[in-house]
Each structure stands twice: as structure tokens, then as C-alpha cells.
Image 1 (cartoon, rainbow, N blue to C red):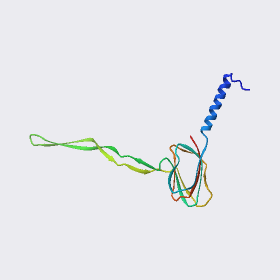
Image 2: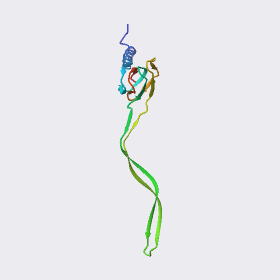
Image 3: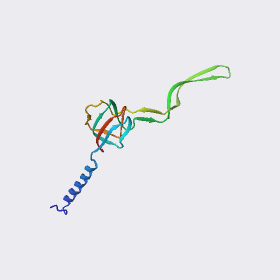
Image 4: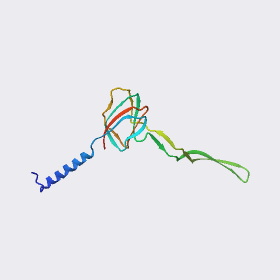
Length: 165
């Protein structure tokens, strides 16, 4: 029988309960889909550690997996450019003699840079064959934003096994 009057035993019991709660909060989770249509979709909307991935398809398909959005949008902004240039000053004296002075100066120009949309590099690009053995990926992979998956022809079955970081 455990004597709860002993401070060491109390601390050990509290620590055990806290560790059990911590282990439960990090439990693994699954995402599964059958016949995923062509296009892009968010399959997990939080930062996770991918433990394993299983993919199979009924058609030949390219599957891309992204950490976050598939495109990166940069808004318009101003860019300052500084460069050296020569400034020539002309001075005509009262006696009619023209003097030219050349000085090198730094000149600043402000330029507008237009908004741009750029494609994000996928973390994984997989070529899934039609009606072949499922592709298995068992290496842990960290996603810092969320998991986006795109495919080009549909007919994909996917099972994700992941945990929260």
C-alpha cells in the first residue's frame, strides 16, 4: 500500500499522472481518404509530425505534398536604390568665363515593386502508378504550418499517420 503522507511518494504520484496526461495529448492520429479528387486540399490544418504515409491510386498520378500553401503571395512594396553618379555644375562668372565642376554623389531612387504570386516548393513529389502496390513513406517529417496535398488526376487513396509536435 502506498503511504501518501510521504512527500516523495506524493511527488512521484503527481509526476506519474502528469506524464500520463502528456503522453495522451501526443497520441497518434490518422487521416484517411478514398478516391481523392484532382486538385489541392488541406488534409491536416495544424503543425504536425508525419509518422507514415500510404498512397495508392486507380490512375497514374503526380501527388505533391506541401508544408502550408501551394502559392506564396507577396504584396506590392517600395524599393530604394542607391547608386553613385556624377553631378556637373556649371558656373558662369561676371567676366564670362565658364567653370565646370564635377562631383561624385550618391543618388537615391524609389521604385515600386509589383505584387507577385510564386509557387511554393513541395516537400514531397510522388509519381503514383495505377493499380500498383501502395507507396509507403515511414520517415518522420515535420510540418510547421499545415499539410496541403495536390494531385493532377484523382483516384488517390491516402492514409496519414501523424502526431502533434
